[in-house]
Image (cartoon, rainbow, N blue to C red; front, side):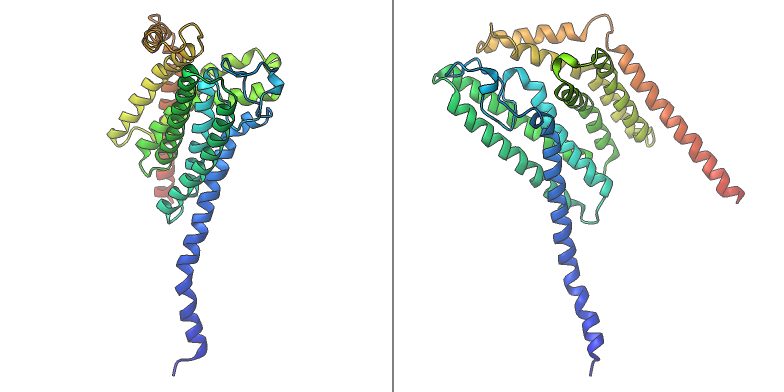
Length: 317
């Protein structure tokens, strides 16, 4: 006959895995939820008043516009990208740092948490926007274009979450490079919304120019150069640092013009022209690329020296 204590001891572990899995899933969902909220907070602290719309049905003062959880406007395209993608990246980074045993379960729960925030914000914002726009084909095109853009940003946020949380160092480093400029934009939005547009220190634009290079350099130092396949992340991140600022400049310029609104071929032509000029033949991006490269190489060198000294100390002991 088995002793009662032995029976109790054998019965306890049977429920432990499911309880632990449920707890990890809950934490993953909360991480995603908090990440999504964190990404949108710079907009919410302003009072979240919908920006003035060119196609609004009634004439109102800016303060009389309704509240929306997203700053829906063609003039806020890059801001929308930053607000949404930073939320996904923050959730992915949190899961990566935690590194739970049930990583896949936690990751997809974090994805669902981020999606819950983004979908709620999107449905609420576009419902308000639809109710206030003038009827007509131009309003429908504007509404559809904004919706497509926001959906694209939501997908980018999920890609950021999955790549940063990837077990692959190369994939994570590539995503750090992709997020460097949106993260900088997100930080600038914080500064502008906290101190007010007219009170922004003059040094902020200058600092913001160099921050992506520092972030990319730190990511490259963390990545390292061994094994050799990690050099792919170095090349791609430096290319991103060159191309993405020009790309975002072109997108914001095209969407910010009212003259060509709705003329897709002309908007694309303008985008190509602005993108080419933003890249610049004078090597304007070269200093930031060099800074990122130097930081990465110095970081790799410091880690190599530290590893060598640690090995020597172990041998001497």
